[in-house]
Image (cartoon, rainbow, N blue to C red; front, side):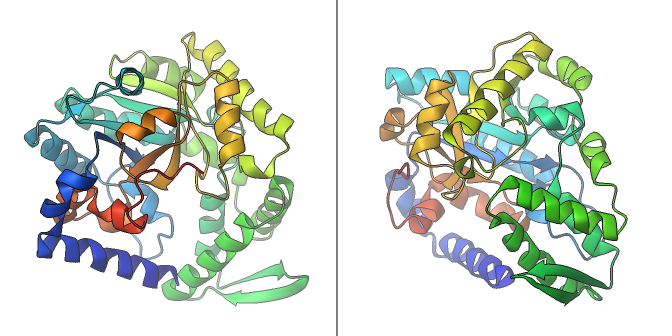
Length: 352
């Protein structure tokens, strides 16, 4: 199903490019700015089975996007400046922001050098438990469990189900099924119980993954000292906030901010909601972000920034730079707003 979805999305992006429709739609749907969303920036890995590939782009693709923005004379600004422009309703020049979720080490090693080439700032949203080295990147653990197995047995719907993982295609199908199953768990505790049991059965060292991939507090201190870098919050545990009680969700927001500020000795004013889609962040979470003192908060709902976005500073939409669509031809389509406009049924704001 996800393969079909990716194929349809790619076909839509290519149709917008080859038809030239993105040029016609740019004046209507490009808005006043765009906030790009990334996770990993690193060279492409070897191997046929890479179910989390959508979360990573290669440095060359990032470089191509930055060059395109410079050619269009679009300002590349910090989230602080984006907040100031939105508050002041200053839309005289179009802008772009680059945001990276989770706090991966490759953000420092591969993204920052490319951003420096263009003197372009970036915001990195840190999950504080990942920086502690205690957090659980369950989607990576799931990938590793499946990668090393010829079959996987899980209790779906109260029944033990054995799933084939003997080929790259079978592994991908099983990953997609289990990823959706885990995300639908009623609580974070349920999700963690199932992924930990899977890791135990398949000898995956789940506890070491955060230390392997994510910047530690000491590394973040040096990283945050770069004038191009802004550090934001991404909760304590990377949980689905909408499935928490109001008190627990507020604690995830306020304590993550407090931890980062204490560790880095600098204010943390910007937030990214984990997962960030409709089932993970809605009106309650948007209100809680204000209570927690954040100036802005970003979702994963696709969309450009419009003048009306100034009324929804804790529900800002983003445009994903997705590893499945690293084609230079689609770069002008992404910056035109045409793709997100079609995805949203031509609604400009999605903050409900």
